[in-house]
Image (cartoon, rainbow, N blue to C red; front, side, top):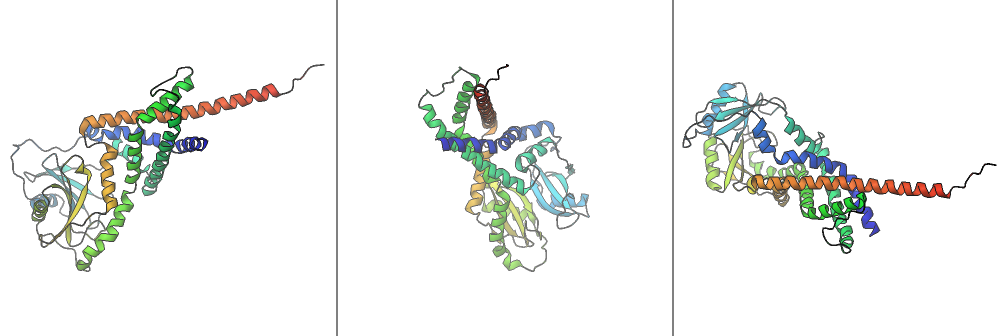
Length: 376
């Protein structure tokens, strides 16, 4: 038991500062959509009858190209809540970081409503801190390691709590001293949130592996699919609307979210439209799958299977963010987040109080044991 206490103490101390940062930044991120909707000045679709038909994607992309004729269209995002599309453009066919233009086009009229201004708001900063602390992939992997240390802290805490609670009725909070009261509250709140904290900690760790896992899948899957097209020039898509229609027909249970036009970068194919789809339910809305459609022949379509580790990654996302059950589930996630913050802070207080009390006790013993000096 002493060993388990040491494991719980030191794993908690090592991970606490980072877990506290993640909990504090994660709290507003739970309501990311609501905050963005409240404060951001987004480009909105003008009011029109609900049954107004949509124009073909090819015409919408052509409208964006007319606005910036010197730019290359790279990919297209389809808004799910409004009849809008966003066409991302760059000065060259290979995307240049920091040189993107994102034009919002009304899908019913083909009118370019405006360009998304490149900016980084408060929520973007909070997200970067939460995701990688502005250090990129090394920061993500480090926070993933802290997630594993946190999981060890939770497991060891349960082991320590089990024999402790055999002496007390569940929920007992003794009030004989401040430290004893906080010890009981720390144990009670910790055991109440143990399942949620362990699930969020482990799914967060899995999420930090997103970049290397997708790179691994792409390295193992894409070369074989693109081998017949190796050496061919960059294709011009014959009909983007027809390709998207073919995907919708082949996969009626999925929604088309974006289209990557033929490209020589590792994120697409020089001879294909890479059409990204997602599930229609709140839970599967974070589970994306690509479909490659030949740019010249939409009947040539392939939907590569995702590896099991990517499936695990995508399943972990809604469990981590808690955004698949609407606002009620988000509120529950926020309450559990606040409780976890209390558990972390109370754990630090208990550790500091124990060490301070031990030092005072040792100091008192030394003082009482010191020989008295008697004046002659």
